[in-house]
Length: 367
Image 1 (tube, rainbow, N blue to C red):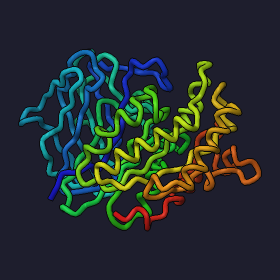
Image 2: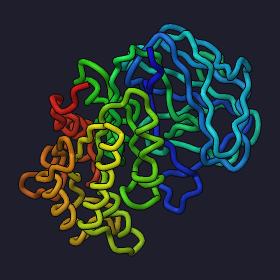
Image 3: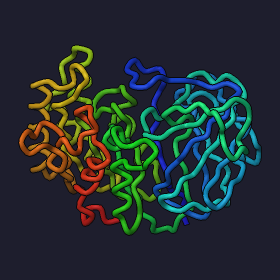
């Protein structure tokens, strides 16, 4: 048996200059979060993080619940935990079965001022917040509701030695922006429903780039931590490029060129192959209809087409899944098909997320 990732969520710093959601902290509050499990097991342990914190983080009580029961989290036998700035911690193993596709409810009580939280900023999931210590309360009446995940980076499960894991490593098209909040209709969720063996954990960050930091550390910088650190991983699926091409326009900077993006993809593939991973690359999705100022430019859209032509024909990757073709408007291929558009011109709705997942040939993702 091995410990491996049953759930992952990529985190960012609350101190970045580009902020797509407002960071926050807590004081004498309980935060209850829903973690949708990609994989399951009889035993589990929770990973908590203060990676981007500037002060020690104290957790005075923590509890996990599944459909099979609930239990307190302990840390080296203690009920409380203090995580130094920049550090992470894992709970002791818990005898709390959880099934693939089930939800785990994590309740954390923060007795002191936390400062701004290390967080996942657009996970399409809602955290519930109440004053005081309520980790054992069955319900949170009149709770404050905030989209985001805070101070959690993953859940491990004890699984058979031959369990195979894939990692969805990319941007908002994996994290799930545009899909229905709380419905688990991200592209990665739809992909997991198609798999008969193994599962895919989601390490998408909305706004993340292949080549530059913000939002989050760029792909080449976070690859070791967010992909290679997962035991049993055999494949990595990547979707990057939209933010390299579009985000600079919001601040009046030139977008990345196709040549630079191609070199970045080659570096990512080389790193994956050195680690013995198979890498599946997505073509860059359409974003000509983006409603946000500066995102859609003639230069950026031209570079997208050039990079996609290269992705479709190169032997750099082990396989390609052509997301762009799967979701584009055939009459205007730089635009998302109206039936698949979330409404902002650059993210997919639930049907679009399903179309993205269906673009993956499962023969190339043999877990």
